Length: 129
Image (cartoon, rainbow, N blue to C red; front, side, top):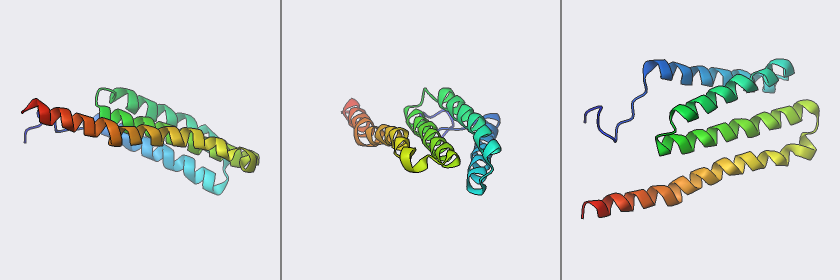
């Protein structure tokens, strides 16, 4: 299979480095959350979310990547809200609000897998008949 096939998705090394940096930011944020290091934990929300949105934007032309990257950005948002609620001692009252972005991300992926992907496979099969 050649790299020019529409079924092959390759990531340029420079972009892959950015994705790896994103994982680093995310881990630092979550380690700060786990250890209670509030200033750096809250500060790490911004690079983590900004890089997630940038990755989402750069891959917007690939529906699968777009759906998954939107879900990731929503996951980081929910995760960050939960961290802030815990840091401020309001998590017991407010953590249910984290369900909004969590469920939005889940809804996007359910739509992708349950509706979009089967519909696309059906169109692909009928195209060759």
